[in-house]
Every structure is written in C-alpha cells, then in structure tokens.
Amino acid sequence: MSASHAKLEARRRANTELGLLVLALIVCLVAYALVGLAREPRLPAGMAVYGGILAGIALGTHLFTRRVAPGADPLLFPLAFILNGLGLVMIRRIDYAQGSELAPAQTVWTIVGVTLLILTLLFMRDYELLDRYRYLIGIAAIVLLLMPLLPLVGQNINGARLWIRFAGFQIQPGEFAKLGLAIFFASYLAENRQLLTVATNRVGPLMVPPARAFGPVLAVWGLSLAVLVFETDLGLSLLLFGLFISMMYVATSRVAYVIGGIGLFSLGSYVAFLLFAHVQDRIDIWLDLWNSDAVGAGQLQQSLFALGTGGVAGVGLGQGHPDLIPIVSTDFIFSAFGEESGLLGTTALLLCFVLFIGRGYRIALLCEQEFGQLLALGLVTLYALQVFIIVGGVTRLIPLTGLTLPFVSYGGSSLLANYVLVALLIRVSAGEVGARPAPLRRSRSSQKAEG
Image 1 (cartoon, rainbow, N blue to C red):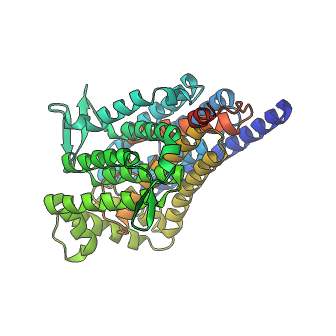
Image 2: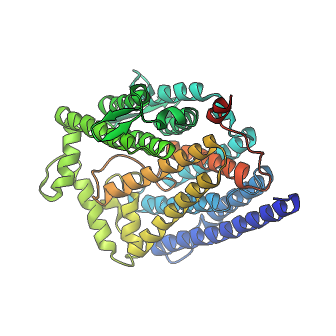
Image 3: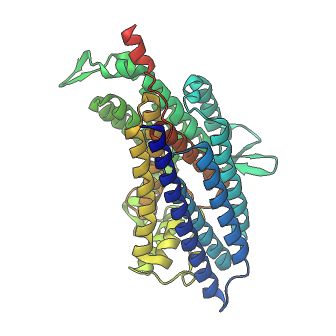
C-alpha cells in the first residue's frame, strides 16, 4: 500500500468512526431523555451534564486514536461507546426505581476506563512488547486471579470470593487477570505451535501430539478448578478454560485438544458438583427452575418474568419494574433491558455485541503476525464467551453464573478491563491493517525452523 493511499484509507476510517460516534451519542441521549420523561413531564435535569460528558469522551478519544493509531478499526470504539452509554442509561433508570445513586459512580468509572484506553495506546506503541514479557505477565495474572483468597483483603460477596478491598475501594482482580492470561496464552501458542501441531502418538482412532504438549492444558485445567473450588466462581472457571481450549484449537487445528479439554472440564465440573452445594444449586435451578427451592431460584424466575413482560416491543423505557429483579444492576441488567425495550431492543443490543465480536475476529484474520493473530483472537473470544455465559444464564440457556455484561453492567473492574481490551484490539488493528503497516516480522517458530 502506497503512503498516499494509506493516508486516504486512514482518513476514511477515522471519518467513519466519527460518524458512528455521533450516531451512538444521539441514541444514548434519546434513551436518557425517554427515561427522564417517563418519570416526570420534562427533560431530566442532568441531561446536559450527561450529554456533555459523553460528547467529551467520544470526541476526545476519537481525536486521540486518530493521531496515535491511524487506520485502526473504525467500529471498535463506537460499539463500546454505545454499549457503555446505554448501560449508563439503564443504571440511571434503576436508580430511579430503587432510590440508589449508582449512575454517578459508573460515570466516573467510564471516565477512568477511557483514560486507561488512552494510556494503553499512548505507552504501548508496539503490541509485540507484550510478547517479550509473557512470563512476567502470566505470573502477574495468576497472582491477580488468586489474590481474593488472601486473608484481610479478600472479600466474599454473594457466595463468591472474587473481590479485594483496598484503600476503601472494592476491586475484582480477576477481570484484569483474564487479559493477562489471554496475552500469555497467545505468546505461548505462537512460540510452540509447531510442537503442539505435530501428532506422533496414537490414542484409539486419533493421532495426538506428544504427552508433554498436554502439560499446559492440564495446568490451565488445574487453575480453572482452583478458581471453581476456592473462589466458588463457576463462570470465571468456565471462561478461562473455554478461552484456552478455543485458542489451542485455532492455533493447532487439532480436534484432540477440544475433545480432551471438554472431557477434563466435564470431569472437574462433575467432581465439583458432587462436592460443593453451590454448584448443585446452580444445576438444580437450571434443570427445574419452577420447582426448585435452591438459593437463587427466585432471581432467575424474576428475570424470566421481566423478559416475558417485555414481549416484542417492550413496555417502554422508564415504564418497567427493574426493582423487582434481584441484582439487576450487575448480573441481570439484560433482563431489565428486555422488560423495557422488548425483543427488538435486546436484539439490537446483542447485534452490537455480535458486531464487536465480528470485527475482532476480522482483525485476527487480517493480522500477519502469529502473536498478533492469537492475541486478537484470545481477547475477542474472552469477550464473546463472557457475553454468551451471562446472556445464556439469565435466559436459562445454560446454568446461571455471576459474570457481568461487558460495558453494560454496573461495576468498575469489568469496565476498566474491557476498555483495556478495546485498546489492545485497536493497537493490533492499527499495526497490521492500518495506514502504516509494519514490515512483516517472522514468528519465532519460523525463525527457528529456518535456522
């Protein structure tokens, strides 16, 4: 691509991003106005402040990314922005119903999250720096993942030990650990793809790689079970193992890893079902919701009632009863959307998630670096699994777990981690598909093969 053509392409993408941000801002402001008008017959008093903050975030971030990441994917930030904006609207709606004040805190977390996105892009001009420090990042991720088990700082909330309290703040370090593990997995698989791909042993009808290649699978299996056993978090355990197995399959194209991984996770889950009451409760609620007296059955029942009440078009923003849904600002915020915007609104919301996921996979496909491919793949798979697990849980497609809906649910840790995820995807897309593509650098495995 010539320099002039690259500049035109970068400008076209930047203009596309700006137009989408303007559209997203309009949608969020209209939604906010409808919520306020349902409460009293005039525009909400804080609409100008809310609109000004969102407009400042959109314009400031756009101008910054336009300069430091020219040619980056033009849909990633607008999609994150509209999901975040609509999440703020629904959290404000929940405040009206419950008499709480969650929206101002979430607005602050939004500003901090966008600041993290900007800082990530500013200080990490080359994402391959992450490849060089993979072991340090991997160790840090494991420390973060297990930090809630520490005495004094670890906090047990709603039966799961996922939080730490530090300097007056509650933080969920597992949200950042997921990113670190995705980076480590990408680096490990990029370097060891050849070893993991070559099948030398026969197990029944299948040819499989050497036994030492399965060491990482067993290690991640043990880590995910540790999370399930000691932190009582089925969702995070499923997320971590699903992430690694999907990346292993894409890196090697070996079905044996998928079969072995599913078998190991099924075995571990069955043992956990036999040993732990909270796992039995989740399965019991999923299989027989209306006759279950397990703790948490009422939450899912109210969630399904809300979705059913919404019907096709919803009862209208501000017209529902989100205060009847337990834990509505975090785990069940999708149900609140379903009640007030109906099937049409939730479908539009899911389409935003699907578009984000699709753009992420497109970035992975177009990337010419093995590490970049696997990094983008891991990050977007992490995002996709989280959306599937929580939406599947609140709609009773799968057993309910305690994950948050990315960018939409209330919570600072999840919001900050997801903005870092967006920044990493933007950097990969700018480095490989953008206006100034870097010269192709061979992976370590190909360099060793030639040597």
